[in-house]
Structures are given as C-alpha cells and as structure tokens.
Image (cartoon, rainbow, N blue to C red):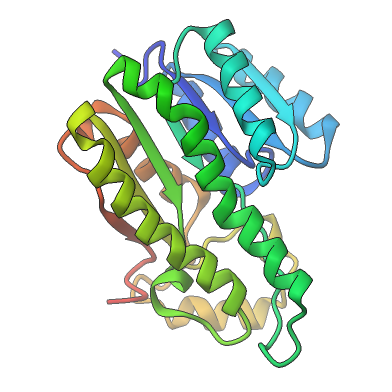
Amino acid sequence: MKLLENKVSIITGATRGIGKGIAELFADQGSHVIFTYVSSDEKARELEAELEAKGVKARGYKFNVADYKACEDMAAEVVKDFGSIDVVVNNAGITRDNLLMRMSEEQWDEVINTNLKSVFNMTKAVQRTMLKQRKGSIVNMSSVVGVKGNAGQANYAASKAGLLGFTKSVALELGSRNIRCNAIAPGFIETEMTGALDEATVQGWRDAIPLKRGGTTEDVANLALFLASDMSAYITGQTINVDGGMLT
C-alpha cells in the first residue's frame, strides 16, 4: 500500500528544487498532484507528463499564489474535478536579499506577499473542504533562517518566521477537526540555485554542518511525505528542521 494512495495533494511552486522533489515523491506514493508555478510553461508540461507516467493525475496551474482570489478559484476547481483536497504543501517562495539599509519597500513587500500571504491564501482556500472532510494535512515550508535569522535577509527571515506562528495557530484552530498543520525548516539544501555558486564557498558551508554535506531535495521531500501521510497522525503544530545539525 502506498502512503498517499488516491490522495489529492496541492503543492505550490513545484516546477523546480524542493517543490519538484516533493511532487515526484508524492506521485511515487500514489497521490494525485496539483501544483502551481509562475514562469515556465514548458517545465510545467514536462512535470505533468513525468507525474502522470507514475500512474496518477497531475495538473499545473499558472498564477501567483499571493493572489487571494486565484487561490480560491483553484481550490474550488480542484474539489470539483478531483472530489477532495487531502494535503497542501505551501512551498512557493522567493528571495530578494539585501541589507536592511539598502532594502527597498518593494523587496520587502514582494517577499512577504509570496512567502507568507500566499500561505494564508492557500490555507483559507482549502480550509472549508478539509473541515467538511474532517481530515487534512497542511505542510508549510519555512527555513532555518526563519528560526535563527540571517544578515541580509530580514525580509525572508521575517516571512519564514511568520510561517511558524501561523502554523502553530492553525494547528490549534483546526486540530479538533483532525486537520494537522506542521512546518519544515530546511537548512542548506543543494538545488539548481546553489549549483551556480562558487564551489569553494559551497564547500565551506558543507564543512560547517555537523553531517558535513548539504541536504538534498529528497531529504526534505521525505519529511514532507511523512507529515502528509497518516504515519504522522498524532503530530501537529511542530517545526522540524532538516539541516544536517546546523542549528544543533
């Protein structure tokens, strides 16, 4: 029996990196996958085909999850077409790094809207369905930066720290209806984005981590799968770091 057999999962920002890794693993475990993206139609079509080849249904929606109405409309369409929404992984996120003295209002607003408001939007959009079902799992992608802060990332850190308070509050509000809400705080995860960085710099980061390596998208996806599945049926309101011991 697959862990997410016939479940319906929504994953935001899933055409690359961690989001893509989660989409692939969820499909492997039997979940139909609905995902959002903002840029490449080509990558979205490729991902749809890849997921459907695993024997599940897949559908990509192109819109900015900071748009409240777009999230509502998508959730309604998913329920109409798939019959339920069992899992939501709020993964969409951006960075606009700068020291606070140089950070523009636009850089602040863009990160808060994409990383934090989007999670409010999606959670609101699926809440009614999950309440009716009396079950559901919401997984919010935070960051170790949201736990400890980081110079040059005040906007990103604030958005990811905000997610932690939101996660705990939603867990308290919806727990009586068997709806769980947890957060994942990844550390240094090696993706396409980090692949473009200077190798010596990246090696320095690896050396500073107790497990002496960067994380993989699979490391994060495995935890997302656990939190989405019934294996974590008694876990809610938690933040779990996937950081190789970085914050130990």
